[in-house]
Amino acid sequence: MSKSSSGSKEKNDMKWWQLTLFGVGCTIGTGFFLGSSIAIKMTGPAILLAFIIAALGTYFVFDALAKMTVQEPLKGGFRSYAKKAFGRWAGFSSGWVYWMSEVLIMGSQMTALSIFTRFWFPNIPLWVFAACYAALGLVVVLIGVSILNKLENVLAILKIAAILMFIVIALLAIFGVIDGKSPIHFPDSQKDIIPHGVLGLWSGVIFAFYAFGGIEILGLMATRLKDPKEAPKSGKVMLFTLMIIYIISIGLAVMMVPWNKFNDGKSPFVNALDNYNLTFIPHLFNGALIIAGFSTMVASLFAVTSILVTLSEEHDAPALLCKQGKLKVPLPTLIVTLLGITASIVCALLMPGNVYEYITTAAGLMLLYNWIFILASAWKLLEVTAKDKIKYSIGILLILIAVTGTLFHDTSRPGFFISLAFVGIIGSLTLIMNVKWKKQKKKKRGKVLKPWPTA
Image 1: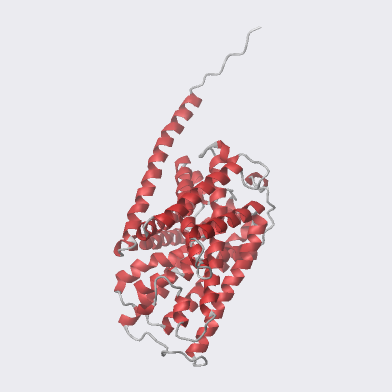
Image 2: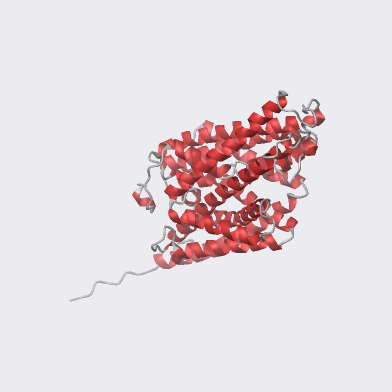
C-alpha cells in the first residue's frame, strides 16, 4: 500500500531516530515512575529479572509489528494486520478491545495527573485538573501529528534527564559523597534478592510489562516514517535504551533501600532518596510524574482516535466517525472519545479505589491480549523463518507468564477475571456482527443481474 493510500493527510517525513524518541516518550510513564514500587514490594530486587523478561517479550512483539509495517504499511496498524490475517472478526474485536482498554486507562492517567498536581495546589478539586488535562491533550491531537511528535520528543528528553539525575545522585550516595540518615543496603542473601519466591516474581512480571506498554502506538506511527524499512532499527534502539535506563535506575534504588521499605503510593526514586537532605527531590519527581503521565496520555489519545477512524473507514464502526471536516480529527470521533474519557474519569473519581484499580488492571491485561494477536498475525502474514517462529513462540509464552501471574496476587486477580468479562462482551458483539456480515455477504452474492433492456 502506498503512503498516499493510507488516508493520512500528514507528511510521511519522520526519521527513525525521531520514532525512537517518540517511542521512549510514549513508553516511560506512571507505569514505570509509580508502578515499579508495587512490583518491588512483590518481587524485591528480583524485579530486575522481571524487567528483562518484559523487555524481551516487548522486543519480540515490536519485531513482529515492525516487519509487517515494512511489508505493507497500514494506517490501522496492528488491528489491520489482525483483520488481514484472520478475517473481519479479528480486526473488529482487536480494535474495540484496544479502544476500550485505552479509554479506561486514560481515565486513571488523568486522575493520577490530577492527584500529582494537587501536591502543589491541594485546595483545587480533582475534576478541575482532570478536565484541564483532557482539554490540553485534545488540543495537542487536534493540532496534528507533527506537533505531537515534537512534543513527545521534548518530553522524552525531560523524562530521561530526570532518571539520569536520579542515577547520578544515587551513585554519589552509594560512594559516600552525599551523607544519608541510614547506610546503603546491599541485598546479600536469597531471601533479600527474591523475598517472596518464584510466585512473587511471577506476580510482579505484569508490572514490568506495564512499564513497556505503548508499542501499539509506535506501530501506528511507524507508517509515517520516511522509510518504513527503518522501523525495526528504531524499535531495537528504543527498547535497548529503555531496558538499560530501567535496570540501572531500579537496580540503584533497591541497593539504597530494603525492598520492604518501598511505598506503593510513592515513586521508588523518591523512596530511595528520602534518607538524604534533598528538599527539591519530591518536587522534581512530582514534575517528572506529571510529564510522564501527560505524554503517555496524549499518545493514548492519538491512538484511540486513530483506531476509531480506521474502524469506521473499514465499516467496523458507524460511518459518521470517519466523516472528515475542518479539524484534523473527525468531530464525531472526537465527541465519542471525549464522552468515553469523561465516563472513565467519573468512574475513577466516584468508584471505590479497589474497584477502579481492578478495572484498570483489566484494561492493561487487554492490551497484552492484543500483543498476542500481533504475534499471531505476523506468524500468518510474514514468511517466517524457524528463528522467527521460536522468537514469536517465546514472546507469546512470556506474555502468558505475565497474564497468569495476576492469579497469584490478591489485588491483581480480580482484574484478570474482569478482563475476561470485557473480552467476553466484545466477543459476543463480534459474534452478532459476524452473523450480520454473513447475511450481507450472502445477500450480495444472491443478487441477480437485471437483463439488458430489449430494443
